Image (tube, rainbow, N blue to C red; front, side, top):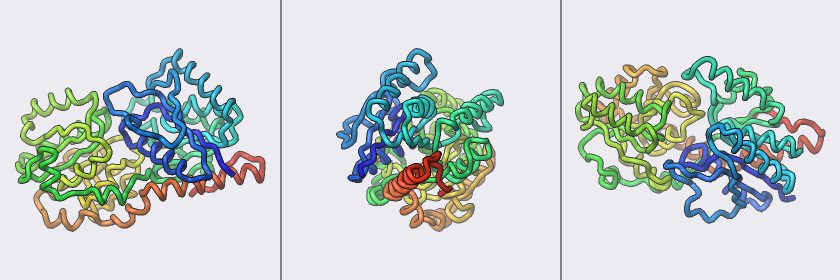
Length: 399
C-alpha cells in the first residue's frame, strides 16, 4: 500500500532543519511505499536556497503567503491554501517542521481531518536566553498545539525530555530521530588539510579553530569573540575561521576591528552544503557556542572530520561530545572556560590528534540519512497501524 506524506516547512534556506527536511523527503520518496510532497514558502532572502537547481523526484509546492515573520494577512492566505491542499489531496500523514509551518500546517491538517499529524522539534522555540514573557508565550503556544499533534519527533533526547517536562504532550507521544546527513559521503569528501586551507584562503601555519553556522543572534559568534581576546593573548598562532553568512556579519566585523582581532578572525563566508567537508578538513578544532540548538549538525560532522569539539553543554551536545574523550563541554556562557579549553587544544597537537574522531563509528551510523529515514518509516508504520487497529490517537511508545 502506498502512503502519501506531506512535509511542511516555512522556508528551505541553507540550514540544519531544512537539510534534515530535504533529506527526509528525498529518502522517503526513494521508497516505493511513499508518495511524498514538500510544501514550503518561497525563499527570497540572502541565506541561500536548498532547492536552487534541484530536480526533485517528489512533488514540490510553494505555499502562497508562507513567510517566517508573523503577518496576519499572509498567514491567513497560507492557511487557506494548506487547508485546501489537504482537503483535495487527503495525505495519510502531514509532517510539519519549523514554528510557522508547525502552527499553520497542523491546524490546517487537523481541520481537514488528516489521519496522522507529526511535528519535528528541531529545537525548542522557548529557551533560557530570552525574556521571561517571551519564553512563557512560546511555551503556551506549544502547549496549545498539542490537540493538533499526534506525535512529536525530536532530534535529540534532551529536546524530547524538555518538551515533555514543559507539558508539550505526553511521553508516549514523543520519539527521538537523529537529524541525518550523508555521513559516508561527508567522510569521502574530506581532503588533506593543506589543500582545504588553500581552497579557503586560510593560513597553513596557524592553528585554525572553525566556527560553523549562520551569522545570526544566539548562534554563538559573539560568545566566541568574547573568548577570543584571552585566547589569542596566550596563543597568538590561533585563528578563528567563521564559515557562514547572515545579518549579524556587519556587527561581528565591527567587534573584530574594535578588539584588534582582525589577524585572528577570518570570515570565510557561506559555503554550499557539498563544500562543507572541505571546511572541516581545514580545521584543527571546532568551536560551537550556540545558545539554542536541538543538536547542531556541525558537532557530529566535527567528530567525523576527526576534529576535537569544544562546545557549550546544552541541548543535545553531550549526546555526541564526551568531555575529555572527543572534545570538551563548557558551561553555557562561560567564555573564560571556552577560552581555556580551546587554549588547551591549541597548545597541544598531540592531544588534538588523540581526541579527534573518537566515536566516529557511532556517528557514521546513528546520524546517517539512511538511519533517519529508516526510523521515520518505522515510526509512520507504527503510528498508522496503531490508528487503524484501535481507532485511537495514533500515539506510539517512545523510541
